[in-house]
Image (cartoon, rainbow, N blue to C red):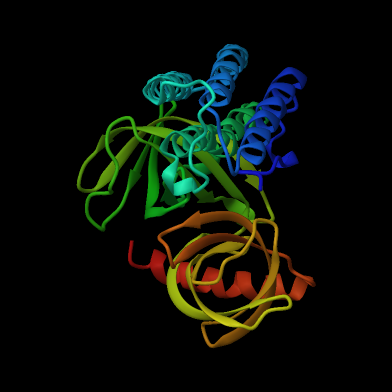
Amino acid sequence: MAIRVWSDEYLSGIELIDAQHKALFDRINTFEEENDNTLSMRDACGFLEGALAMLTEHFLSEEGVMEENDYPLFDVHQSMHNDMLEDFRRCLESVQNYRAKTKSLTRLLPSQVSDRPPYDQVLETAANWLHHVARDDTIIFRYGKNKGFNLAGAVGGRTCEILSMDNQLLGYGKIDLVENEDIEINYRHGRMPVKFNDVVKVSVIMQNQETCQFVSKVYLNNDSSVKLFRGAVINTANDRAFYRISILIDAVLKPEGREPSGMKILDISAGGMLIETVTALEQGEEVAVEFMLEKTWFTEKCSVMRTFKKDTTLHHYGMKFDFVDGESMVNLVGQLNYLQGQRNQKL
């Protein structure tokens, strides 16, 4: 089973970058599929050495694109590249040391994955890069498409939500100052859990209910405001006129061909939701979810877009709504905007 399936949503529009990304996806997933039961140290070393060479070349190409576009978070992204190369080097060194201890180039590790620490380490290192592409690289290219957007004129004085790069809600606030490309967000609910040089996402409802989302780096945080350095706009749209609402409600999960089961919705937007359940789901699987929001029942079809394993029994999944008609989405947006309006009154 592939660690992460390639999707067109990762496309940059730059032929060289896309070819490099796809080649690395193929290399990593092929390695995982071919070594699911047995793994020789020679194969592991060969995979890591090849991946290191490919990543080194790819990162130079990607950094060139960032420089050409004057990407505001170049230093942050370059630091990620350096850290990942170092992770691959450390992983290679660890496997080489393990290989030396076996005193045999042909010795195979036991068949149980849990008994194969080098294999687990290789897969974890590779999976981190795949996550980097899906989470961080796509931001660079979305910024390239939106870099002419007038951020200051669009977001000044507007209410916003602040999220981590993994879309965890950190808080709500109001953008009261946009000056010299820096951004100040004021709030009233205690110090936000961010520190200097953290990277955050900010979603803003603009005029006409359009949404702007940008990514920025924290350079100051106190008890009433957080200041960010020059935002990189990654999305402007009129089809996401809503916030992601942090919420905890019970719901019913209805996988096709299986018995319904209980689940919890941890946060929700008109685009999708984060759920917690004991039921195992596959990426791309289609399910139905039944829930009540503000005294209104919804039964909506969803697709599993992201999988996050919390522990041995509970799983977290990022779901995308597959609305069968426009009325369902309009009803849900209405409920979400009502909830958000109540929260805004507390700011």
